[in-house]
Amino acid sequence: MTKLKLQSLTGMHDILPEDQGYFKKVQKSVENIAHYYGFNRIDTPILEHAEVFIKGTGSATDIVEKEMYTFRSKGDDSIALRPEFTPGIVRSYIEHGMYNLPQPVKLWTLGPCFRHERPQAGRYRQFLQFSLEAIGDKNPSIDSQIIQMSHDILKDLSFKNITIEINSIGDKECRPYFRKILINYFKSRKSSLCSNCQRRLRENPLRILDCKEEKCQRVKAGAPQVIDHLCENCHIHFKQVLEFLDELELPYTLNPYLVRGLDYYTKTVFEIIQKSENGAIQGTLVGGGRYDGLVKLLGGRDTPASGAAGGIDRIVNLMKTGGVKLDKKKEVKIFLAQLGQLAKRKSLKLFEEFRDAEIPVAESFSKDSLRTQLNTANKMKIRWVLIFGQKEALEDFITLRDMETGVQKEIKLNKVIQEMKVKIKK
Ligand code: HAM
Image 1 (spheres, rainbow, N blue to C red):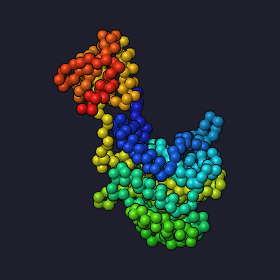
Image 2 (spheres, rainbow, N blue to C red):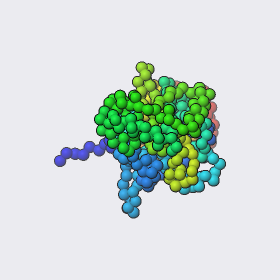
Image 3 (tube, protein in one colour):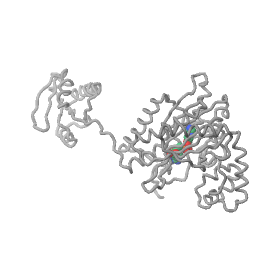
Image 4 (cartoon, rainbow, N blue to C red):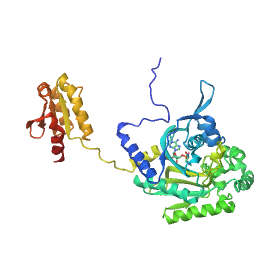
């Protein structure tokens, strides 16, 4: 019998201690920028009724059709692991009557999402996303603020060569007409499309514009562009978004074929991509847009909204390959060594007092021999070792050893924190 080798699931990865700093840095940056712009944190459950995404993300999208992890609960409900945040946040907005709050309600979140995608570089089955959602405002300035915040986060993380691609895909007034024109165009060229797009022609023709297959790219090059078929309302909205972006001096390019793979978008859609020095696309880091119909679709009032989400694992990968440096950890300058039961107990208390004073202290409470502990301190290149033995514990003092000179001195226990503060400042 072959022995089963236990490994993480395909497309799912561990975040090891040495990488935690990168993830923390991204999280801090998202949090700071979100709070600065008045966004409040929300956390929704990882599991939702599958219906939230079938209706919200859209039943004909790749995410719902092929990639969603669904299962039946013991009560026979159809449950899904969230493939994205937006529909769950909208569900929460409706459930908690957030339309009673001053609008827009600005929310941000961060956590794991799940998509059963074909694994490839930067594409995982469990990945971390951050999401920014502004619900309850139809003003184009909100779209540009979301784009600016997304751009700010990446800039704050030292990304260069980032481009904002932007488009408008119209709304329920103008999109049905454009859909018809598009179907007519592709119908007469159906045999030149990949099999996936031949199916999309029936269900989701706009997605053909987004297809990366070479044969479809050729057909799409002559396809009608949605931007030429926007109704007046969508046209004005888009123009104003671009004017705001110009005002903010954000570098954007119009991409008439950008449609995004989720059904709820109306008007503005955008992506922020990273290009290498030679202009090759390295990955989409953030994607988003306006979704004016989603709140109503999920059972709420007619409420406009706009948002974006970023892929944290992808951002971290590029930070690492791009050589982004992490902030240095607070250097540990003190080692607490202890001998015997009483000293061990008292050391735990002293350790807590150092924590209260925000002074980092290393220890190896599990080791009993003083020599081993001093060796550890040496390996960690720590100069100051506090030795807490039986005698010290009984008489309430501690021995301080300077590892550089070998000189030792005694300090009263109630003066240790104060004295060490002075020592480590030198
Ligand atoms: P999305 O484009 O599906 O949009 O995902 C946003 C970002 O999440 C992507 O640009 C990418 O960086 C990251 N991402 C997506 N799938 C994966 C994956 N399999 N592995 C690693 N990273 C991934 C949304 O999710 C929308 N909810 C965005 C939004 C918010 N629109 C309005 N509000």
